[in-house]
Length: 227
Image 1: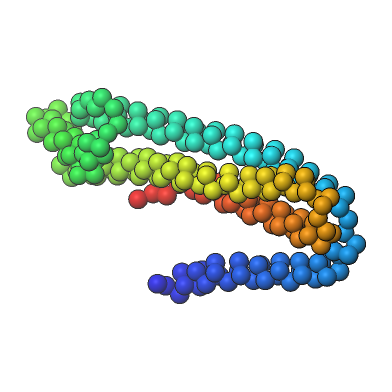
Image 2 (image 1 turned 90 degrees about the vertical axis):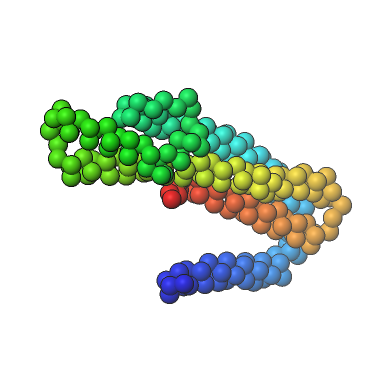
């Protein structure tokens, strides 16, 4: 592991811990100073605001996630069709649809080798005014383009899968403060002021965690990894 990678890993571990400690210290001080002046009407107002705000955020988040997945799938379908058309144009091989055999033929250079052999025959017959070295360079460029397109395709598939894997956790963390606030609204009048203060703090923290998970998933969906 390089020094930069080790430092980045340490920062990723230390920064959340520092933030957690700061939040805990600030909350403890506010609890000591403010819970005695906290009233139940404030708790009711905050619970209601959390329900409205997080519900709106949840509906927008679901719509954005669905739109993003559909957009990436459409992009991949367009890329697949483009590659299928290109392969047919250069070697005359027709694939009914995108499948594992096509990916295998791209990776093992079967397509570009066939492309090279066809053009080499034309060159030997005097029908193509290219040298053998130029044909080899063209073959390598074609292989590089096909491999790059395949990498983009695989990267988009991984991005879609990453979004789908993150949907459940994001939705759960967004729903938890809504459900918890709804339950607390029904019993807030029966709770002591200190309990209301604590529960309000918990609901706000849960909302922040839910938003953080949503932001993380959205940011990850914009990054497409390649092979």
